Structure formats: C-alpha cells, structure tokens
Length: 404
Image 1 (tube, rainbow, N blue to C red):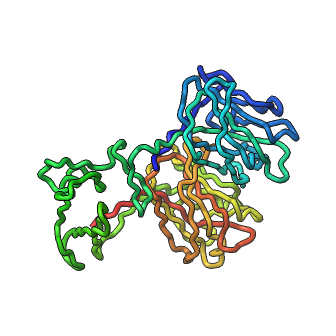
Image 2 (cartoon, rainbow, N blue to C red):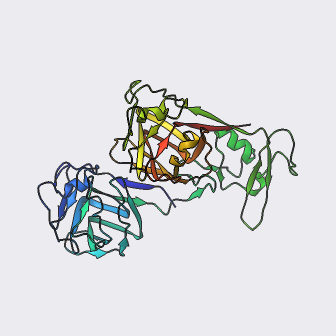
Image 3 (cartoon, rainbow, N blue to C red):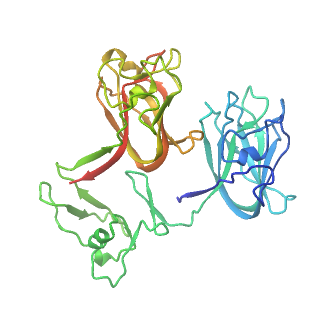
C-alpha cells in the first residue's frame, strides 16, 4: 500500500485553468456548475435538476493521459448534504467517445456537510476523460448533489513497510528506509543511528548484530533482540525499561475570549451561553463547572469545537478534560479529531471511542503520525449519555516524544 497522490484541480470555470474542461449531463440552476465540483472547495457544487438522478454524470477532461485508481467525494455545503449518490461507476476514455466502466462503487449516505467518502478502485485507469456516472440513489433522494470530487492515484508498485503500532508507511522512494550495502563495515543499528532512521530494508543477514545476544529484563541501557520465526523474516523488539516516559510539549493557548489572544480563534457548532463559550475549552484552566464549553440544548450529537491557530502547527497528540462530576455524562464518547487548512474542508485524522472518563482529569489521545494543520476540530458523534448537552472543560494540542 502506497501514498495516494490527489489531483486537486482548483478550477475557476468550465474551461480554466487550461487544458481542463468540466461538463455534466444536466444542471439544476445557476447555483450549480460542473467546474464547481473540481474547484477544490465544497462551496462549489454540482446539482442535478429535481427528479433527475440515475443516469446523471459529471465529467472532467484532464488534457493528458493520467493514471487514476482512487476517488474522493465531499458533500454539498448546505442542508442538502445528504443528496450524494448511493451507487456509481467511473467511466474513462482517451477520446471522449469510447468509454470503459469501472466496477460499481457503493457509498454511504452523508451524515453532515463535513462528511467524506473515499474509494480505491479494483484496477488502475489511464485516460484523458473521467466521468462519475450515477447508477442508484439513496431512498428518499430525488436528485444528486456533490460538493467536491477529487481523483487520485496510489502507486501499488512502490515497496513500502507498515509500522504495526502507528500504521505509518515507510519506503525507499520517500527516503524513510535504510539500505545497508553488503560491503558496509557497520551493523544495521549503528548505520540506523547515524542516519537517524529506525527501520531498514535489504540488510545482509551478517549485519544483523545487536548490543546483547541474550537480552534479559532489568539491564542497564538499550537492549535489542532478534527472533527469526520463519525463513526470510525478521522481527526486532526493543525492551523498554520502567523509566521509559513520554514527554508532551503542548501548544499554549490560554484564551480569554473567542478571538484573544491573537491569532487564535475558537468556535463551535453551538454555545450554551457566553459563560460556556468555545474559548473556555482553550483557556488552560478547569476552575469550576462553568469553566468549560457546552452546546445548546438538543445539540448533543454531531457537535464540534474548533481551534484556529492562525498558522500551521504540528500535532501528534491531544487531550480532553471532562467537566465536573455532575456534567460527566456530557463528555465525548465516540469522537473524531479533524483537521483543515481552510476551515471549509475537514479531514478526519483519527476516530476514537473512549468511556473511562474521570471528572476534571485529562486524557491524552495519540495520533498514528504527526500531522500539520491550522484548524483542528473535535467532532463529537456521541457523548456519555446526556441527551441534551455535550460539554468539555479543556482541550490541548501538542507533540509527544518518548525518551529513556
């Protein structure tokens, strides 16, 4: 599995930038355009006329032959977000006349305007024209609305290794793997330390040398071992001693209003009052039951709270602190960390389900890998049981490092 290259076209009309050309089978009105689905923002949208759905299509001409095996769809950016197609196929062509169909792709019905759908096709396509062709609607929908379409390509021929703990991928092409030559006088640990890399590829078997051949617990220093369970396989483990502790570096916010200190801006899907405003979750304190953010009544589910750092920040961990015991059931249970660079299109970085909350006690949640962004949002799909309100006392974002 490799990294997907997404083709973000940023169109400004049906024929710009050159040589791109967008077209569609039909449009609802002047608020609907073909190019709007390829402008990079959900605010530009393709909408079919009423009672026109199955058989509708939207097409992009890329000018040159392009490889595609992935697609992303974002919802329409208003109250009709749920009008995405249920089933569709990708048609592709080199001349715009003869078309080849992909398999039928089945989506999920969008839950809100920040939802997203991505699919990896069964086979690679190489063409100049690509067309999304609708084959089935969700029950209750009479037409189609799509806010954004992005095609992409994942190079499956790139050799990569996956870290089973973090799910991060490493590859030679990205210079995140080590190749140790046969004639190197160094062992792979020394070679890796010098290059500040921890995973290596194609290391001669004679170079598999370790600090201790028979490691045991409770020894001083770092200890490595190897366990050859099958032919041509290698498993490396590091024995972590009791004093192996993570170090958290938190991005200080200390907010005093939704817009101070600059350039920070706090916002939310709703606020119960000015006393329980968004910024209270980023002021760094939990002094009383009103030192928190809380939603309006009836908006406990699918609520969210966002922090705009004003500039890009690295984040690999975040923490949530619940309110006092009386409001503990307002704490998120099923929630997502989402990220954006424009406060319009949010990507879910990781989803969580956590129930072991203790009042006024922070819990840190690790990401699979470090991300960089300007807007970070906690999207709460479900809380701990309060039917009316969702509330959080404190949220922090930061970087986690582990040292011995």
